[in-house]
Length: 88
Image 1: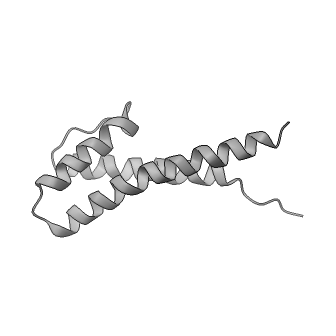
Image 2: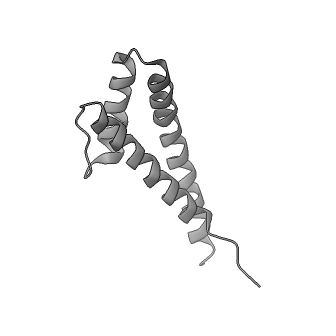
């Protein structure tokens, strides 16, 4: 019988992919993106880029990424806590 994948691991992979997309968008638009402090710096810089840009598609993409990142981060913490509580 196969076990179901751990949702915390899935969310961690998705969060890292979102951070990578944020970094690539920032670099492609000439902004400073951070690799080391990406969870803090990149959403802030992406929000600034979204407010400045005239490209509506890029603006929507930036806002969607900025809004989904903290929501998924909270879900990750909840999922990780739930998985860790199974060990007691």
